[in-house]
Image: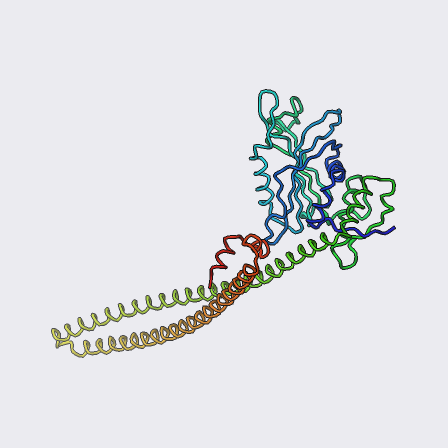
Length: 412
């Protein structure tokens, strides 16, 4: 029998699902591959953190689990779920907060140690080329030579400083579950979407016949699908992501346009530098020519002095003078050509500077467009504030900090 259930990848549905303690124990037992005897939601719960382009839902549990030898151990489980690809820095920040939280410490023997922790990441995206839908990252200890160390382990000191992780890639869940965990996670399988409605999944309830715990999960999600308030909250999540995605798409387009403009400006500046270098070389050549001209003039002066002193050799001196003057004419002609080249180079420089001015004008237009977008954002902030929303709600709605909301709200 085909049944419609609410999609638990939505934060509000997932939270509703985990409010059932029996369901929570079923899911955590499957993830840990151990029986969860007791489970308690920790008071330091953070949900829907940072809606600036992604959604991270976080909830912490304290659980008593039964080990293979029958003993019971207290374990801290930090569960984080995200729709979209996110940077690992966010997960590390949450993890650091857990390590620093004194409430996560317990006394054991003569010392105080951190409660062993397991981090669970339910990801709505794929992680690189890892094909396994569920990845277990376990702790192991080795000596200098790489030999596995088991004596004295587990140890509360070591367990306080290390933890295990479970990474679930929801897009890689198999259509036909192969083990207990995959069966539990099958209610997250996004290939079961009901048509184009991503809020609902359609599954065959007969797949779970005889499995009371799975039927409880299915019935819980069926009830969520029929809950008008939950459906409204799912619509709100969709609207949040639509706004964020539209904003990010526009920002990416603007950044690409700005990057292209900057690249053009850099090319123009490089061309200008080359032209200036060519101009410097031409000026150096002109200086050398002028120096040569000065030397030629000096030679002419010497020749004229020699002419005054040696009238007997007037004919020879006059011939020498004619040759010198001819050389001077050639030098002056060369100087004229050099000056013409300089004029052409300066004209090319003027054209390049004009191109740079046009590029700068284009950049100013881009900045004006960005300013206009900021003005539109200011109007949106003032409108939302004027409608009675507080600054934190407006910040969450538009994906920005409360400080930015106050700054934009204060602009006139």
